[in-house]
Length: 448
Image 1 (cartoon, one colour):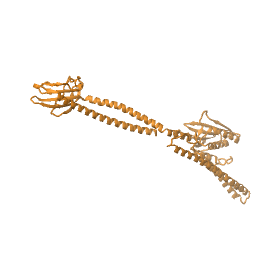
Image 2 (cartoon, rainbow, N blue to C red):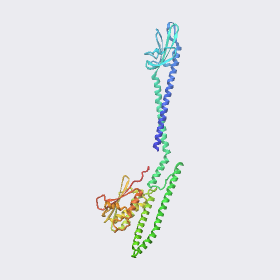
Image 3 (cartoon, rainbow, N blue to C red):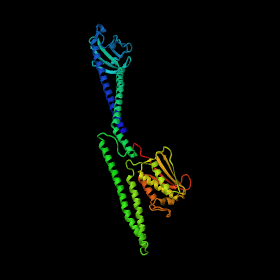
Image 4 (cartoon, helix red, strand yellow):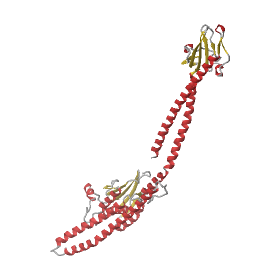
């Protein structure tokens, strides 16, 4: 927005200044040319009034012209009076050359641009007939360069002043844009803090034009947070309310299974009850992760979530070792709800603990803002087909292993809710075992 406003300002300043320069130079040139022509007309009339034709056609003047420039040698201001067969009279300024007397060809005043003593000249001329003597040619001229220099000097000064005006206007535009859009910059920074998790609401004081928007956004954020919390509570309540009837149904089915007459029906009830338990657990986890995903201020740190999980895993799998590899100073902040992050990591760690022979290792690395979490075990690993099946609901690759077959499905669903990826495959270091790789994109940049 700032760039667009500045470009628009620069465009209009350029057009405005250009228009002022063009119109001012044209008007000034027209005015100066008109002044020169009027001045020359006055001077030629004055010259004709001052020249006296004596007996025998001798030419003389009562006094010099009123403009002293006609007395300065080669000043660019010249006059000339000639009479056929008589000596031509010239101004003191014309120390060389002559003027074309053909300009004066009748009693009217005519002007042309002719070649003068010092270059092209604006030349005026007229003829007056003296009885008994003949036609007297009056010619007066001014170098055209003097007119051009006057116009050029004005244009140079005008360019300097207009450039200063343009710079002042652009500087004013920059100041206005900087201060005028400062509240938007402040709002952008507050939004970035909200998205990065550094804040849970839009912070700061804003002018009256923006304050209602900020207030509405904060109200929406608060309402959304309340709604999410209520939905999570209701999901938990629903799951709890269903578990009790399911437990009763399961117990009754197990009792019926002891009677040969009802064993088949009891088996169906047990199977369906187990499916219902799986679906309740899966849908509950999905609702919780979907509700909190990408919420304002939703962040957590992997380095804080891992220690309690590793401690729990060591108790759950006492015959296995759990180690971590976290580089010093690594930023492990991720835009994930702490509960969902813990659940995701717990699923992967528990799965690795079940299948490993001796050790489970967790490694963290950040590349181009992307955080990668690697959970490595030294177990038998998985085939490509098993990897495809592993993420399906209820999949149990080894029925002898404890579990419900929901863990990896829930992990993948949590990852999908936050835009993460969970990949299973052979270890990148070439050692036997399985590698679970969680790729977490970087936090949104501050400028949105």
